[in-house]
Image (cartoon, rainbow, N blue to C red; front, side):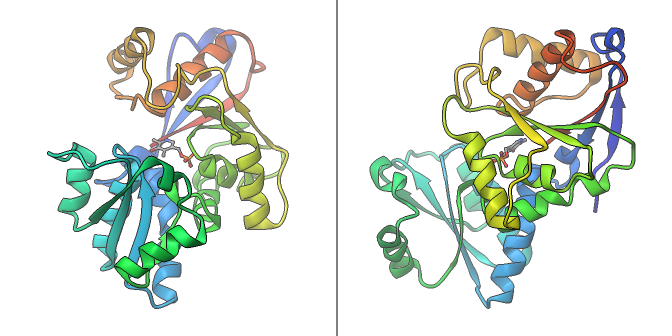
Length: 281
Ligand SMILES: *Cc1c(COP(=O)(O)O)cnc(C)c1O
């Protein structure tokens, strides 16, 4: 199962001699964004191998990751528990309604406890309540997730120089960079403000492969105010992109990456002849 790769013809690129391809991971799975799917694949295999029948994971109320775990659990016959940051609000929003419709049991942690969710005492209390379970970190940010994303470059059947991804936890960037052949580079666009994304990517690579790579970097200039924040300028960009290309960019991730990438191209950040793959989904 691989997603299509399509060349994008855009008159904002052509003057700079840059070629751009879209890797349509958004089409990888009907129910969940593709990169979430990539990050879960090896987690599910590990859970099954270790004899677990239940997955437990974490996310905000609008989390694509919770949706993805709920759908994946249903597909693979594993029960799922979603630990949601903050209080319960009824009726459930679309993301959480989708998760419960796929059989996910939701439980809520206040923000202070949620921040300590990786501490043994907090995890032990959850296991006490829900029984033994395979715990997947928020956003699928573990070595299994990194390994799944490292498989992406091998699916690209064109010659390319740079792969661009949007970064939340940085797991996708860590994996994609590690999966590149020599000479390839990966560029991540941060959708969150602040944080320690570069450090997180390094740590994820070290934990997964024993060593961090130096073939990637993070662009921090296009978060538009922070996670899930948007501006009229970004909305206008998305509408224009849809009109030009009939591709609807997701505002949390894809729109910020694409806006940032086109800005960098126009500013001359890429040499003439550079071939870029931008990952959607
Ligand atoms: C979750 C998500 C990302 C961010 O992935 P990380 O591995 O957490 O950095 C990027 N793009 C899309 C469409 C996503 O859903």
